[in-house]
Every structure is written in C-alpha cells, then in structure tokens.
Amino acid sequence: MERINSSGSGRQSTVWVSASAMSEVLKAKRRIRDHIIETPTIYSTDLSSLHGAEVFLKMEHHQITGSFKLRGATNTILQLTKQELSRGVVTASTGNHGRAVAYAAKAAGSSATICMSRLVPENKVSEIIQLGADVRITGSSYDEAESELGRLVNEEGRVIVHASDDPAIIAGQGTIGLEIVEAVPNVGTVLVPLGSGGLSAGIASAVKAMRRHARVIGLTMERGAAMKASLEAGHPVQVKEYESLADALCGGIGLNNKLTFTLCRDLLDDVILLSESEISAGIRYAYDHENEVLEGAGAIGVASLVAGKIPRIQGPTVVVLSGRNIGSELHRRLIAGEHVPFGEPGDGNDHN
Image (cartoon, rainbow, N blue to C red):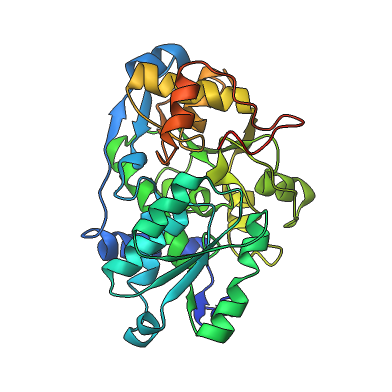
C-alpha cells in the first residue's frame, strides 16, 4: 500500500483508499469500543410525519464529550507510542475536537495543548480548560489558530492530532456509519454535518461500503462553507471565516488537504447550505419536539428537514445529531424565539 507523510507530525499515515476504508473503520471500532459510547439511533415520530418517510436520529450528541469528535481523537491517540504520549499532543480546534483531544489525552496519561481562535464560544473554551489542557487563543479564524501548531511541534516536540484530514480520525468517525447501518439496515439517506470533512468522509466510506445505493448528504452553513467552496472550485480553497450558530463547522479544510476533499468529492451525493435562521429553527425544533439540546452543527440535519430542503426519497433517513455543546444562555435565547443575528451584516461578538 502506498504511503504518505502526515503534514507537520513527521509520522507516516496510510493513504485512505476505498479498498481499505472498511478495514480501517472496523479496526477503529475494536480499538475504541471500550473508550466511547455506542450511541443509540432512535425513531422520530414528528420528523417522520414532517418528512413523509421514516426518520431516525443518530444521538451522537450523547457521546461522552458531547460530540462525535471523541471517536476520531481516541482512535488517533490510542495508536501513539509511549514516547509520543510523553511528548504530549497538540491540535487546532473550533471547540469540540479540542475537548475530545483533551479528554482522550488525559485518559491516555498524556497532556494536550489546544489552539483556538477568538471566534470559539467561551463555553467550549472553558470546558477544555476544565479537562486540564493548555489553551492557546490565536487569531480570528481556525486557519490562524492552526498556524501555531508548527511552532509547538518544533519548540515543544508535541505530536499533532489533526482535526479531520487524517486516516485515524476519518476511521474513528466512520464507526458512526457502521452503527447507523447496524441500527437501520435499509437506510436510504444519511444527513451529516459538513465542516472540514472528517465526519462526512468517515460516515460515507462506511455506509456506502455496506449500502452502495444509500445517499449521504453533507449539510453546512451558508457563509464560510470551506468544503462546499472547495468542491465547487475542484480543489481546496481558503474562505473567510464568519461567526455562525454552526460554529463547529467553521474553519478551512487545508490547502494541502490529502484525504477529506477527495472523499467528500467522490462519496457525497449532495451538499446543502442552510441559513442561520434555518439552523436556529432546527435548534428550537429539536428542543420542542425531541426534547434534545443541540448546538447549531448538531441541529443542522433537523434544520434541513424542517426547512424542507431534503427531497422525499425512498427508504429511511438517518440524521446525525453531532453535538450538544452550546452555551446555556444562547440556547435559552434561541428556544425562546429570540432573533440572534449570527451571519448578518454588522453583527458583533456580544451574542456568544
């Protein structure tokens, strides 16, 4: 099998190819099963009625750290050597990945440094600090925060745990796809939040390996959707980052992207954009109808159904609820019906 060098880490990673995708996902499942929760997939009566077909919710927001990110982070950190663990790990994050890395590193007896931008909500920053990680706030975008990684590797010897564009991360997230097909064997459509592509690539690799005709649709916010812009351009591009209710989906995919761009290009059947008001409505619907607290990225699949953006198709639909890590005050305002002006001209930072 061909090999490539992982950017910045000095470690070798296996090129992700379709022939080996399921093998890596299955290995990841065995590796992480004692360290994560196999989250339930439940039937939604209200969304099924609204959508006109069976709708199931993959409750990944019930994961230990409040998001799916723990799967990939755990799969990566469990493969580090003792020497690498002793050096500590470092990553850039919009919040959920950083929390997962901090948790997994602590569980493995290592230390973690998390680089984030000023756009990361304060509740996500404080949750990472509570796990004992060192937090570095750098710049006003994910890309600016990520620029700190090279210095920390060179000066402190830390090992990079990439947020998405890494085989171990993709395989870890792919275990969600295995669980979806196990729970809903005749799944017809999977709705997946789409940021830098690790979740979508992993789930699509697993689902399509077992259910070739199933559709996997990526969902993201209207402004600053890096993967959507890259797919339209035909290559990775850099986009301006904006504040969004779906903050977990913000940030670039990396101009030197090796895996997630190609996998999303080849495996996703569609990418659909949602406005901030539609995402807000999804958060409210999840709370009012499903009794679930979701952050913007976690609610984007529900939002797409509520907004009528998913065409009626044959076969059950599974919606991945990816995270719950939303600030309590922001959530209270949203479910009360207050208009929170994310993504609008002239909006400020006072709504974090």
